[in-house]
Length: 479
Ligand code: SF4
Image (cartoon, rainbow, N blue to C red; front, side, top):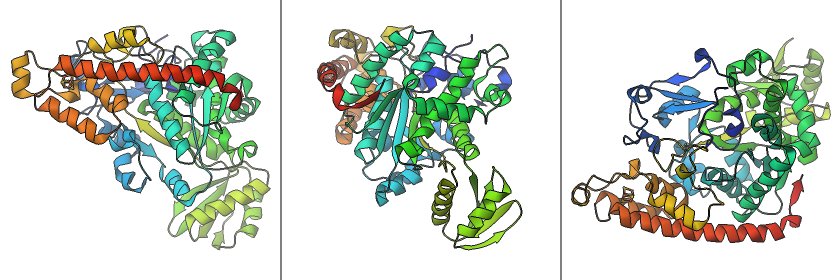
């Protein structure tokens, strides 16, 4: 098995990154980097950085290597930049404002639904392969923020993936999974969320079966690097993942609606497949044309005839498609209504946001095999403090040099912790950055301040987790 050691690309990727069987080189998306990126993974003092890793960037569902140039990633993957729509997002959160959430696909649908107060949802999942850590916290924060902005929250605990990928027993996956549930509740998840374990959701499993009928081995091989010896359960779990994302749109949960999935950038190929599956499993698909939409039916021409009779727009009906003229959103909405009346699912391709990869405290990537490279949400505050005090920084070789030249926060694991987790106030963060760059603080004192913040956060978080345990019966948990 050629598993990626770093399983800190949170949520779904944790299954994908451990999941593939030695991908062939031609399946990799290899991008040459051309300029400095804003990630801690640029850190030159990371001992493992070599000429080879510096010369290329590899981002796939099973591997993230090299210096990550997020602008280039946006272009190569065909994502959109979150910065371009930041002004349209009501009260963007700190992750968006700071470009930690840097890209998106179709997030305008969510923004419109927020503004028009139409139903929409946020969905993400966690494989309980180890205790929750700050990488997971980032996705949890994103789910909670979207829920507080009016989205219906769906939280999947990927116990089927833990069973297949890690060989965990159902009991162990459930036990660890509940720590994720308590953690996200402690971070502010409200009671109207739907929390489920994959193995307990018949709806997800049924939808996964239908989706599996739309995918073949070649496609899975190209996306996940599967080989002929890959077992069937691993392949099927990819459909479970897609069903996780699409099931909030089933009639049991109120029908079609925009759904946003916050993920790491390496999960974009999976999101693209799921978006495509949303169309494949629905009756009608859409294509933009001048002044309207071209609508096709994947299930037969008779559906097109039924649709044509219901659409009160200017249109030209062809044998294989209908060209409909007018407001695309209105045409799409009416078509979905008709599809539902015809017994279809009318799924909307899911939207997604992409966040940056979190770096390891010890330099290079976080790794589950190196506990000192990350902080778990369950670490005792004392242990966490030790980890942050030993973290790699962007400090200079001597105190004198640092006072003169200032530190380099963009190369500092401690600053990344401030930026991603500890300081939500932009002014306060900017003050810390300016102290560092101006050489007005040395790394020892700066780390101590971060350690105190971290200690306080963990104490409170762990108390809230205990409290969450006593309130679990107020939540809808499918287990
Ligand atoms: S002063 Fe703080 S932010 Fe700057 S390099 Fe040192 S530890 Fe990092």
